[in-house]
Length: 460
Image 1 (tube, rainbow, N blue to C red):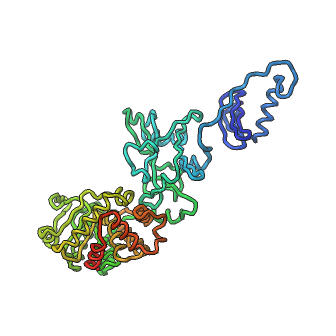
Image 2 (cartoon, helix red, strand yellow):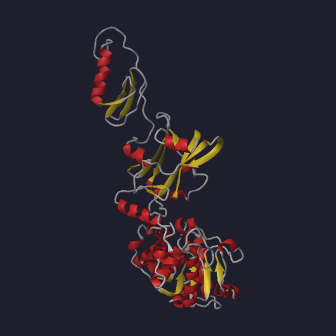
């Protein structure tokens, strides 16, 4: 059999006969002749060693017989023990760090399903590193030299705090190697079947910290998987029409409307899409929208006839009049994870200058494709400049989830964006949000106080 255990600060493995099995903590395991793992305490382990060696004339015996040589002490190179939590979730929180574990044995079924026959590397990719390809070096995992088939990455907690759509940090393991017979490929491993509800969201694993509401995460997962039909919307009411079209006034600004895209059908697979786009145009006209800001490229010349995409005469007049403004480079990662930078600051500056242009008349509409991410952050900034509270901005942001198009955004990702922008730990604790946001854009040289006052007055 094989005996192993620890004593004091040192873990050890002692080979008496057969293979070796490492065990963390003040306990030990041994493999019986049938290969079954048995558990014994550290003292029992040491006693068994002594008993075995005493039979050979060792462990306290003053016999002159030479004891049988033992295997050298092997100290695990893992930064922390792989307990049940680590094996189930793929990570373990240790003080101010998180240790990710990828265990080839527990992932065997997934590796086989993805036809991965050889592994050359494993990494962690997620919301905290922008799902960047290739994975940044800091998130590449190391192959353990002492624990066969185990990969690990020891990362500061501060480096994995950025949330995804769920409001929690999201991640997947990426395995590189021979995939489906081809070398040099990589595969996303998805969510293992062992991961419980509340620890995964829309195909990604989650980091869940002490104090997080697991039940809320589960409920949000249900919303994120929901597809609504026309029957779910009462189109005889303003509320029903606004829900399906993601159309509404921005908090504190009665002449600025956020909305779904007025002609691109991004969710054409759902029976609500044609009605959604139709309602956007009807509501724009009913509210007298005179100008439009698109947080994406100009697609007025790239309509998909097969989907029935077209510009209504009302929207065509806005375009022909030169009252449509486009910010083609606006992207998800910048608005959420780099909102303090020059790029985002320049986009806000451009939008404000367009609104203040004497040729631009209010009301103004603003949107991206879904009217959720880029639109959500842009309108949060403009709402704050207009004096809206964080509570009002947060509630407005989550109303986009009412569309029922298998999309969900938790307010915590918007909260993260604003906190990065303002350099604060909790935007909810900012007593004067308008002053804080104004100061950021003034100090950065993007806006003047006169411009802020003027744009608010024009959109109030």
